[in-house]
Length: 566
Ligand code: VG1
Ligand code: CO
Image 1 (tube, protein in one colour):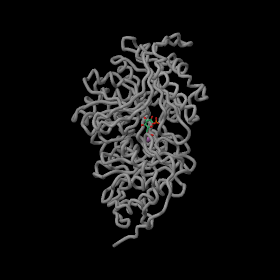
Image 2 (cartoon, protein in one colour; image 1 turned 90 degrees about the horizontal axis):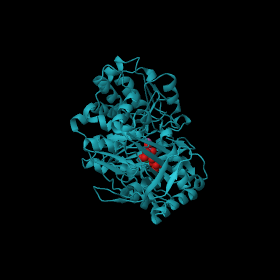
Image 3 (cartoon, helix red, strand yellow; image 1 turned 180 degrees about the horizontal axis):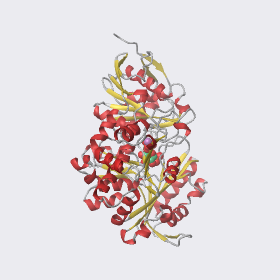
Image 4 (cartoon, helix red, strand yellow; image 1 turned 45 degrees about the vertical axis):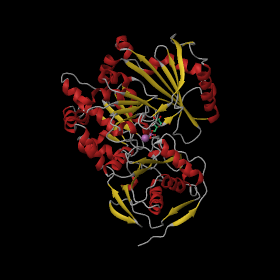
């Protein structure tokens, strides 16, 4: 049977450049005539998917169901042989990565703007992933962007929409469509990685002394969390909250940090919960928070790397091949790598930069300071994986030391006592005027080219600490596998005591500019517990003051205070 392929005339839209993780804009922007169609067609123009299989999933945010139908229309007209679609258009980002790999698909289109708010007046996003299950590398996203600039028409086959709420096999014109359960493949994957019996046993024998609370933040992970924490690990119903995915995330900001996950933080403190965790809209981020103990993502990945080969079956069997972090992430994991004799790569911000190292068998565990932690089990960061990794490690640590209860706080303190501690914090200045942000970047570039900051000393008024600048550089990266070069990935000011401050423009915002300032100060184990176990903001106070002073950030951005501190 032949189907009529219709060619629809269109004109290019400006600014369809994928950022750190896909194209993210306001829903209203995507709803403009031909806007979404243009970008989808540009994907098919940039990547030949004729006769191929692609996965479609996402976090279920507002405008997702419509966009799935758009992809079916345009994809079938461009020759896609098979679409594998998550039921109700839902597949968390890590689950989609797994489905692409497991079903040997050729790529995937993920409908998400991750931790950005959703709803008719908030954000939508489209991201293309390649056949290894990871985000498309820059050469692919650049090609898609080039196609959006010259597009003059797109192809469609117009048929009745597919009912996304029914699992099974269907056809859409010449293409096959399989609608799959969103959760089960992912649960099987985690069961093959972690020691579920050990965790279950620990949780059951400590039902009163070790309470758990998982917060889905009305993002995509609710059903995944339920299947794992309640069905598989036997925790009570009360151990998950906000577990129903909503198209607008209940009006909240589905970003698991101390600011936006305050509901979790408050309950953990009020109800003496030992283990709290949350994940973001699309399920690739995580926060670990126990009573009185917040785990920075930089520490989290270091601790997982430290225990993995001993405690987690996947790594016990396959070994830990290498570690990595994004550049702004603290060097805590570097200390673990050094002790274990492992390579620790430092890549630009964005998960796509880890993929090549994983495919080459050089990387097992990695993380970003932005609440992203993961491993080579898939090619995306994985929020629920990180939460279960922590439970697995805690269950194991307690099995090893049956006479004390090791919680999050104890595990952190033990870690600092061995490796010392890199105090770390990030200041975000969201939606500032783009001109101010650019002036800040330009001013630091002047310091880089003239060396005008080098060797200057800066004293913090409140703590009296003195910081002397060792150097200022721009971070450029050459991929060790394919040799591709990514320039200007952040400006780094280092001090002669090893502290550093990084300035970087966000690539995921949908409006104005967002400036991030990352601060890090290392304290060796010999400093002793009083120094090591301080509150992070206290440990960093002097450095933060100096960073703001020497960069003139508040003047450039017209902001006294950051929007979010993590
Ligand atoms: C931010 C984070 C980065 C992360 C990216 C996508 O990017 O800093 O580490 O990889 O979001 O995360 P940027 O360019 O805004 O700093 V997700 O959970 O939004 O897919
Ligand atoms: Co995300």
